[in-house]
Image (tube, rainbow, N blue to C red; front, side, top):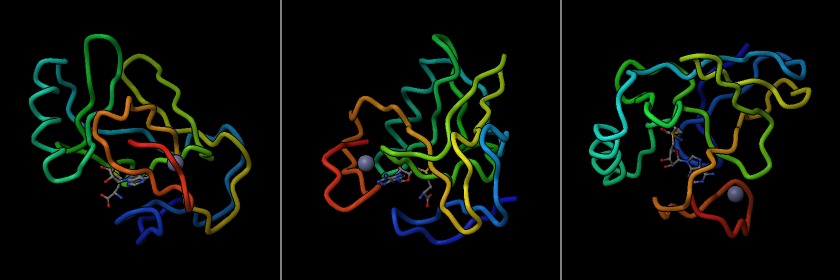
Length: 130
Ligand SMILES: C[S@@+](CC[C@H](N)C(=O)[O-])C[C@H]1O[C@@H](n2cnc3c(N)ncnc32)[C@H](O)[C@@H]1O
Ligand SMILES: [Zn+2]
């Protein structure tokens, strides 16, 4: 249903290889489950290389796709995304928020607080920061 390719947004991205119907569970965000404290340490290390791999699961835990991640770790952020996050227990599902055409890049909103200060390239002139 999806594959990794070079992206216009940044580096690698993930694309639909067939039409995807709204609400389909496209993939899940795999990685190591760690606590907040450990995550803060790793996030600083990753950000030095411009990477965001840590995904907040709940108030206590984070999934670090830098360790044991799957294709989901190559999905880029967009401020007008075509996917959304649905957390069920310890699983972070990435689901289609609308019908997606074959060949479209998949994106979701990272909902970061901008602390990473990476200028968002989801579209020309996007004023936001990741
Ligand atoms: C989860 S990875 C996504 C895959 C990434 N493109 C790659 O090649 O590894 C997150 C990283 O992708 C980049 N990224 C994702 N969405 C972006 C966006 N809208 N604008 C700029 N950079 C973005 C940032 O460097 C971020 O740290
Ligand atoms: Zn944007």
